[in-house]
Image (cartoon, rainbow, N blue to C red):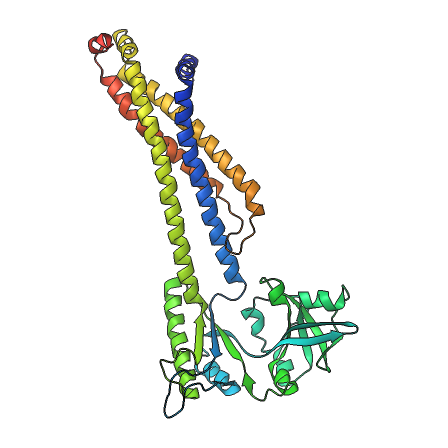
Length: 414
């Protein structure tokens, strides 16, 4: 039941000690404010990391070749390893049950591409149809490379959105011919890539066509595979690690490379890297929570201390109340109400200021690893109510002490 006199009394008490009330509220508000900002940054880091991994498939195993650094079976170090179609086919066949999407690559860096009077240098890649899902590429118009293109050695190309803008200047590129080193290719599709302009500055064509047109023989630059994911993340990482290790061993055996030569055959497992990154992000988030909660606890302790001082100052008043028949629960309620009011008002103020700052500054942050820092509103409100509960506990101790004061002792207090 709303008690107007009680609230008038609380406001009167607080107004008598404006500076003390302000500093107490400031400690609580700053605690919530700092926690909200830290949680927002933590969420921003998680969004940024997640965005980085969304550029390509997360469950991706990439195999690249380098040069040997160790002597093995009579072969000298410094030997350049060249991956072949047979290497890709062997891995693809052996691990078919585990592979979801796959592609081998024949790459020309900085290839000259022409359309009418426009020209530019872009990465030209011979690929297989599975690369669409490996790259997380979305087709904005037309279609992607298909198996009929690969088997028929068709001179077709799928270009990135950046290539389309540079060469076609708003003109629809579908069905038009572009020239790559004097060889005409028909554009059958335009793709968008979440990686941005760098990943959209590519021209894809069938792997077999690229090898034939650019005298690649059966050479490939690298190969990539995405794996079927288990429901359990840790199990998926373990399976991915095992398959990556097995593929590395398979390629090294085929290329006569020492098992411990890490430079000759390089295997990158993005799922394993993702686990490391997400574990680090989780640690950062835990540290932020620890610091924020520590700040809030400091504020709550400040509330408790202030309530102790208030009880001490009002000892004689409390004694008079009890002498006039005030019940212990009434004394406890009076002190608790004041404690909860200060805590709730300060907590909401800190929450609003923190959310407002994130709303204003968040969109201005331009970073690869911090993106859209924000706080879930339900989490923020829950934190405030936990703070209020903690404030009630902090106020209960002095309130309980006040309720236990004997009137005769209180009246003697100076």
